[in-house]
Image (cartoon, rainbow over all chains, first blue to last red; front, side):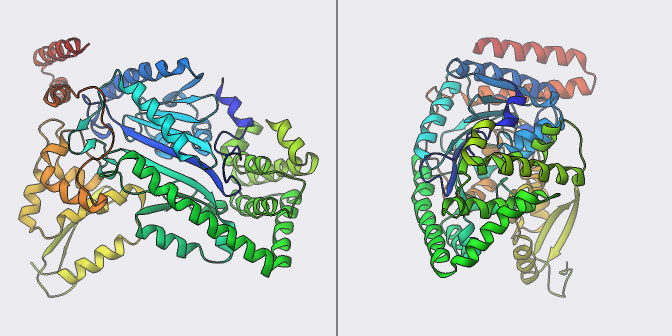
Amino acid sequence: MRLDDLTTNSGEWMRGSGPESDIVISSRVRMARNLADFPFISRTTVQDRERIESILHERVALIASENELLYLDLSKLEKVDRQLLVERHLISREHAEAQGARSVAIDGDEKFSLMINEEDHLRIQVMQSGLDLDGVWEQINRIDDLIEEKVTYAFHERLGYLTACPTNVGTGMRVSVMLHLPALVITRQIDKVFRSLQKISLAVRGLYGEGSQAMGDFYQISNQVTLGLTESELIRRVSDIVPMIIDYERQARDFLVKESHENLHDRVSRAYGILRTAQTISSEETMHLLSSVRMGVNLGLISDLNIPAINQLFIRTQPAHLQKLTGSDMDTSDRNIERARFLRRYLNKENGTGGAAEHN
Amino acid sequence: MKCQNCDKPATFHITELTDGKPQELHLCEDHARQYLTESSGEPTPASGMAALAQQIAIGQTAEELARLDQQACPVCGITFFEFRSQGRLGCPHDYVCFQTQLEPLSVNIHGEAEHGGKRPSRPAGGSEHRTQLIRLRRELKEAVDEEHYERASQLRDEIQRIESEES
């Protein structure tokens, strides 16, 4: 498998399958781990980071027996390739922009990624399309055990797994579910939902994690607390609340269908129309319109597209993906023209299933 | 010392890091509360932890804080001030040597102070042994930086001896 193979598919988390996949985009768990006999990243020397990288590289390679792994040395990758990995949620922005020896191992299905020398020595992440946190937890727990067989993690009897930032100490685990909530946004109920989530210590973030805006009406809900609860309890905390939010979103969609059907249909059709005809379009506008189209497909207002095809567009219209597609450096205005061209080609020539299949 | 915003005595001493430069704030209770609630209104990722860490400074006199800030971890050498301003710890031993300061912070973040989840199946194998390696590697780097090559080669041998004992 090569890095360039990634650009032409949607990856696991945008596959658009699995339970509740009309609203739940993906389920994800990540774990933070550190080797016991090295300082945390901020106090490491260049040599320390190289040693940590090689020790963990060796361990990570051992889990490859079951899956083909793509191993990428981030210090040798071009900026556009690192950006591509960020857009696919395979590494964090911090990991992309950091310095020194650092790497990531990704399996062929892009279900898991192991980041070495991120904020912690090791960050294990497992993703799955749709709502299936228990399945994800099972997989990540197994990977964690496999790696731990040969390395000694920094662990404290009372505080659990020790991390560079005290906000991750204990389980080192962040459980998150990515939701598409356009109807709650349109009906202006989204803030109310967030306020109640914050009261029970759940965090809400945008599509690209901390600090990113809620582009395309995508929201990530995750646990804030990592210490004091078991991993299963943390999973439960998030997975108990998700069905309620799904229910709110469905109610809001029902309301829109019943009470303002023409407005809704108009909104969806216009969005689809712009995406199929625009000559230049920003990433922001694309996300915004795709969000309406995605909801329109789910509500049966658009019949010649399917969800996996739409999900692909969310990813493939991102800046680094477009750049890889054309193979040349582009400034923002060139990219906007290229994005519009890509959308027209994708949405006009190949409709729905056929188009998506061809792109897979 | 007076509050920099009014005539009341300054009881809160806050060190804010803007563009990498520390900036001292001396505030009375009211202005400190106002300042802290304003700045915590929009927590950004990198400074989110730093903002939390700054709470440690509340209720400390300037002298107490200055003394606390100078405390350094014997293993990795990070000072408490560096942790407060970056929001990132330097090594696993920091959780032990800064325990008194970190504990209330931990309760503040997690509402709990004790781990309830999984444990490594292998015994951690003497954490002092572990931190010893971190300390030796740091001393090695310092010895090289200061061009004490004899000391450096002794340290290198010792590190290799410990590493080979492990494997």
